[in-house]
Image 1 (cartoon, rainbow, N blue to C red):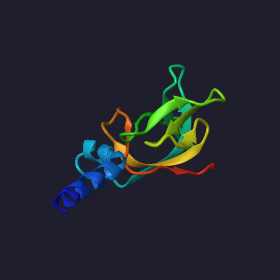
Image 2: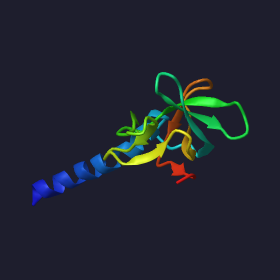
Image 3: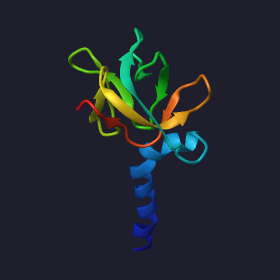
Image 4: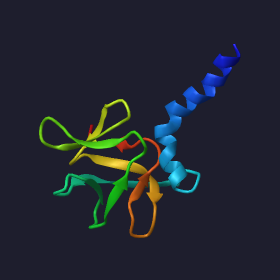
Length: 117
C-alpha cells in the first residue's frame, strides 16, 4: 500500500510534465498571453509563428514531449508526447505562453488551440 501511494505523485508528475515544463522555463508560472498566428516553416524545417496581420515572426519553444516532424505529405507538423499531430505548417493557431526574451522564442505553456482543424 505504501509503495502505491509513493508511485501516484510520480505518475501525476509524468502525465502533467509536458504541459508544465515550458511554464517552469518561463519563471515558474504560465504567462497569460495568447499569440494568434500561422505556423510557417523555414528551410531548416523549423516551425515559427507568424502573427496575424503583421510581419512579426517568432521561433517557438514547444513544451517537453512536443516535437516538430516531417509528415508523410512533406509538410512539417507538431506532435505531442504520444505522437498525435497537433498542427501542421499553414495551420492558424493560438499559442498560450509568452516571450522568453524580447527577441527570443515564444515559449508555449499549455495546449495550443488549432483554429484550422
